[in-house]
Every structure is written in C-alpha cells, then in structure tokens.
Amino acid sequence: MIYITQLIYINEGEEAIFNEFEAVAIPIILKYNGRLTLRIRPNSKTIIEANIKQPYEIHLVEFDSEADFENFKKDEERKQFLHLKEKSIQSSILIKGEKL
Image (cartoon, rainbow, N blue to C red):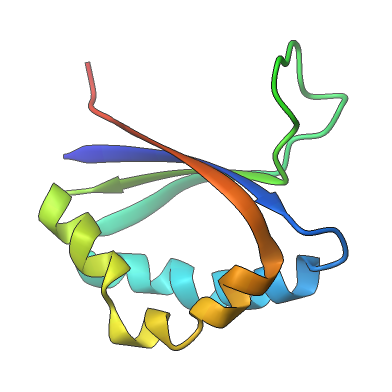
C-alpha cells in the first residue's frame, strides 16, 4: 500500500477548469485499486501554522501498489483531459509515504 499526499496550487480564476479535470480524474483512481481518502480546501481559519504558500486543495490518496499508481498516471481516458490540468494547475507537490 502506498499513500500519496498532494498539495495543489491552481492558477487564479481557473477553479472551474480544475474542477472539470477532477470530475474525470477522481473516478479513474478506483480503476487502479486506489481510493481518494480525503480532499481538503484549506483556508486561513483552518491553518494553525504555515511556512509555505497555502494550497488550493490537499488530496490524500492510497493505492494498493506503486504499479497501480503508475498505471493510473498512464490511463488513456485521464490523458485526454490533461490539458485541463495543465491549464488550471500552477504547480503541485506530491509526497509518497507508507503507513507506519
């Protein structure tokens, strides 16, 4: 089992396009033995301390294996919508982990 934490920073004004991409990408996770376990939109009232720019969203996802995660990234349906991701996301930080 691998765990993915992703901090997502979007381009200002591109929220609708980002949501359009997410509507396609999130269901595809299930095809590859993955689960979106948490999706958060932090705001200044919910952040206790920060030494980085506030992300638009934080995703916690788990996959049964590294291969499942790699296959998700290669999914042909998802690839058809990557232009939405590229237009809406300024940058992201992906952190891989394991359960301790």
